[in-house]
Length: 120
Image 1 (cartoon, rainbow, N blue to C red):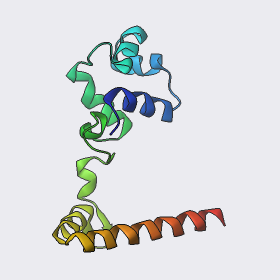
Image 2: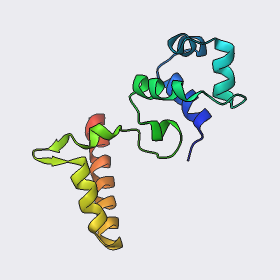
Image 3: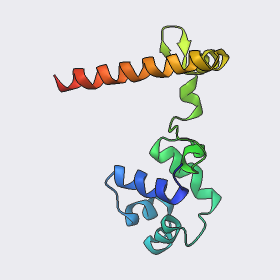
Protein backbone atom coordinates (compact mmCIF):
# COMPACT_ATOMS: atom_id res chain seq x y z
CA UNK A 1 0.00 0.00 0.00
CA UNK A 2 1.27 3.49 -0.81
CA UNK A 3 2.07 5.98 1.92
CA UNK A 4 0.20 9.23 2.50
CA UNK A 5 3.20 11.17 1.16
CA UNK A 6 3.39 9.10 -2.02
CA UNK A 7 -0.33 9.51 -2.62
CA UNK A 8 -0.18 13.28 -2.11
CA UNK A 9 2.60 13.60 -4.67
CA UNK A 10 0.93 11.21 -7.14
CA UNK A 11 -2.42 13.00 -7.01
CA UNK A 12 -0.74 16.38 -7.46
CA UNK A 13 1.36 15.17 -10.38
CA UNK A 14 -1.66 13.49 -12.00
CA UNK A 15 -3.24 16.94 -12.16
CA UNK A 16 -0.02 18.53 -13.48
CA UNK A 17 0.06 20.82 -10.46
CA UNK A 18 3.02 22.24 -8.60
CA UNK A 19 3.45 22.16 -4.84
CA UNK A 20 2.80 25.91 -4.92
CA UNK A 21 -0.56 25.31 -6.65
CA UNK A 22 -1.71 22.91 -3.94
CA UNK A 23 -0.32 25.15 -1.19
CA UNK A 24 -2.38 28.05 -2.57
CA UNK A 25 -5.46 25.83 -2.60
CA UNK A 26 -4.89 25.04 1.10
CA UNK A 27 -3.91 28.58 2.07
CA UNK A 28 -0.39 27.63 3.15
CA UNK A 29 3.10 28.13 1.78
CA UNK A 30 4.87 25.95 -0.76
CA UNK A 31 7.57 25.29 1.84
CA UNK A 32 5.08 23.91 4.34
CA UNK A 33 3.28 21.87 1.71
CA UNK A 34 6.59 20.41 0.56
CA UNK A 35 7.25 19.23 4.11
CA UNK A 36 3.82 17.55 4.23
CA UNK A 37 4.48 15.81 0.93
CA UNK A 38 7.90 14.58 2.04
CA UNK A 39 6.69 13.53 5.49
CA UNK A 40 8.87 15.97 7.40
CA UNK A 41 5.76 17.60 8.89
CA UNK A 42 2.45 15.94 9.66
CA UNK A 43 -0.37 17.48 7.65
CA UNK A 44 -3.06 19.12 9.82
CA UNK A 45 -6.34 17.22 9.72
CA UNK A 46 -8.23 20.30 8.50
CA UNK A 47 -6.41 19.96 5.15
CA UNK A 48 -7.23 16.29 4.58
CA UNK A 49 -10.94 16.53 3.71
CA UNK A 50 -10.55 19.51 1.35
CA UNK A 51 -7.75 17.69 -0.47
CA UNK A 52 -9.80 14.49 -0.76
CA UNK A 53 -12.73 16.53 -2.11
CA UNK A 54 -10.49 18.44 -4.52
CA UNK A 55 -8.94 15.27 -5.93
CA UNK A 56 -12.25 13.38 -5.89
CA UNK A 57 -10.95 10.53 -3.72
CA UNK A 58 -11.96 9.10 -0.38
CA UNK A 59 -10.14 10.19 2.77
CA UNK A 60 -9.23 6.54 3.34
CA UNK A 61 -7.52 6.48 -0.06
CA UNK A 62 -5.68 9.71 0.65
CA UNK A 63 -4.44 8.35 3.98
CA UNK A 64 -3.27 5.10 2.38
CA UNK A 65 -5.86 2.93 4.14
CA UNK A 66 -7.35 1.57 0.90
CA UNK A 67 -6.30 1.21 -2.72
CA UNK A 68 -9.80 2.25 -3.83
CA UNK A 69 -9.97 5.90 -4.85
CA UNK A 70 -13.78 6.00 -4.98
CA UNK A 71 -15.63 8.05 -2.39
CA UNK A 72 -18.34 6.36 -0.33
CA UNK A 73 -21.25 8.11 -2.06
CA UNK A 74 -20.13 6.62 -5.37
CA UNK A 75 -20.92 3.14 -4.03
CA UNK A 76 -24.60 4.05 -3.74
CA UNK A 77 -24.92 5.09 -7.38
CA UNK A 78 -26.23 2.50 -9.84
CA UNK A 79 -23.50 0.85 -11.91
CA UNK A 80 -26.14 -0.87 -14.04
CA UNK A 81 -29.90 -0.50 -13.90
CA UNK A 82 -31.05 -1.07 -10.32
CA UNK A 83 -27.73 -2.42 -9.05
CA UNK A 84 -25.22 -0.39 -7.06
CA UNK A 85 -21.53 -1.02 -6.45
CA UNK A 86 -22.45 -1.41 -2.79
CA UNK A 87 -24.81 -4.28 -3.66
CA UNK A 88 -22.24 -5.85 -5.99
CA UNK A 89 -19.61 -5.82 -3.27
CA UNK A 90 -22.07 -7.32 -0.77
CA UNK A 91 -22.90 -10.08 -3.25
CA UNK A 92 -19.23 -10.83 -3.96
CA UNK A 93 -18.49 -11.04 -0.23
CA UNK A 94 -21.14 -13.77 0.15
CA UNK A 95 -19.27 -16.00 -2.31
CA UNK A 96 -16.75 -18.60 -1.26
CA UNK A 97 -13.09 -18.22 -2.24
CA UNK A 98 -13.52 -20.04 -5.56
CA UNK A 99 -16.48 -17.83 -6.46
CA UNK A 100 -14.53 -14.67 -5.63
CA UNK A 101 -11.61 -15.89 -7.73
CA UNK A 102 -14.00 -16.51 -10.63
CA UNK A 103 -15.37 -12.97 -10.31
CA UNK A 104 -11.83 -11.56 -10.30
CA UNK A 105 -10.89 -13.61 -13.39
CA UNK A 106 -14.00 -12.41 -15.19
CA UNK A 107 -13.22 -8.78 -14.34
CA UNK A 108 -9.67 -9.22 -15.65
CA UNK A 109 -11.05 -10.65 -18.92
CA UNK A 110 -13.44 -7.71 -19.29
CA UNK A 111 -10.68 -5.19 -18.57
CA UNK A 112 -8.45 -6.86 -21.17
CA UNK A 113 -11.28 -6.77 -23.72
CA UNK A 114 -11.89 -3.08 -22.99
CA UNK A 115 -8.19 -2.28 -23.49
CA UNK A 116 -8.16 -4.16 -26.80
CA UNK A 117 -11.29 -2.33 -27.99
CA UNK A 118 -9.68 1.03 -27.20
CA UNK A 119 -6.65 0.13 -29.33
CA UNK A 120 -8.78 -0.55 -32.42
